[in-house]
Length: 249
Ligand SMILES: C[S@@+](CC[C@H](N)C(=O)[O-])C[C@H]1O[C@@H](n2cnc3c(N)ncnc32)[C@H](O)[C@@H]1O
Image (tube, rainbow, N blue to C red; front, side, top):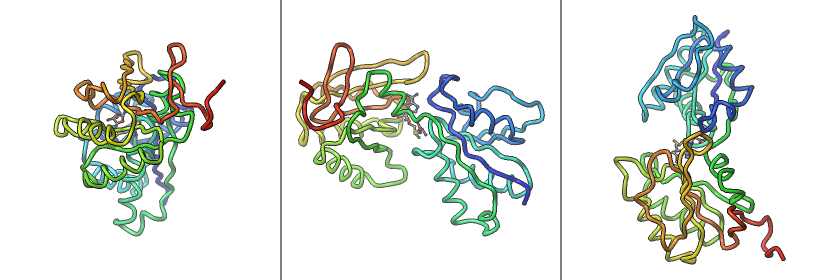
């Protein structure tokens, strides 16, 4: 088969944070497939390039469409925000391959990494991910709330820094409040909490607070929440987590 499919991450939003490898893959593609707002971030690179914009939450349909185009001989780029492997389209493509036409397993499929929201958000405030950390999506579209609660408790008990993706949406405004209530039973009230909105863009906004005072109403779909470990602290205007368990002296 002469077609190919590359899943690219466009980074958190600022053009400078898109990697040269992603830009090159986008320029080579005959077809761009993605969620409309993510496609809008890609400048027109070739007049002969077709754009296939779709709605949010139709990831598997989008992945299947991209695979069909590639199987028909097109050079397809599937566009994700941030990194395509983090709560995004790369896994959806492989889910579609696993369940779909066996021919798709012979396709030339590649993934180009991008700067994920968690890294852009951490850089806005210092180095809160400097020690061991984990990332949890609060969305219960693809898993149960019981699973999310179990992972939050495990992360708190293991004293990881926790990065929360998808903290709220119009359909799920209450879960971030429920997550804070749960974490308050496991972690100290003075634990640093950071709300970082539109990280890695010109509109980036940071609210720095504590677990005891965190107001869940400030989050939206463009917010990444970072909850510190027991060692996470402020130095000057920065927040960081030391690399080791011992305090700096
Ligand atoms: C479906 S996930 C996609 C994550 C994406 N693949 C990545 O690597 O960043 C969407 C969530 O990522 C977070 N997010 C994406 N871009 C962001 C940004 N620029 N600033 C803060 N959070 C962001 C938000 O929590 C949002 O609800």
